[in-house]
Image (cartoon, rainbow, N blue to C red):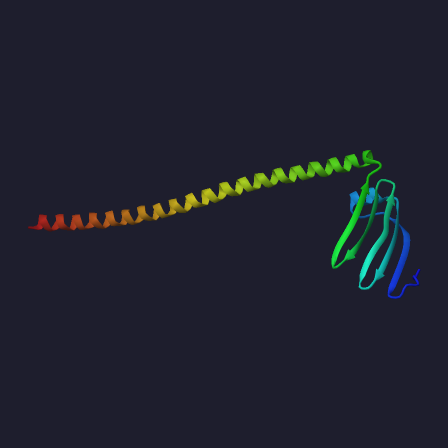
Length: 155
């Protein structure tokens, strides 16, 4: 419906939503049918949400507010009239969330241990190279010593 005010437009609409597939928690909240109504007013480059409601068997939400000087001010209300129906889904989501955090902590701990071991292995590699060069130096000195001894025996 268009209001009679100049430079102003009011639009009201409504409809129903049907859910068969999709995000399980959202489909569970809105299934089998949800009703959506809204009334918006556009005027002078800004807008106002006079009324916006979403009604389903397990979820009810409403929203109203306006765009004032480039800032959006909204009032939002949310209700879950049948919380018992959501309990299994919420419990499952909580268990998965906690498990995700636990596994993340285990992975972080293992990565820290791996980094420590990599650092220590690098230190040992340096020491092994030092030992190898010392062994080569010892072998060279033994060869010189033998050469000197052989020269001393010849005289």
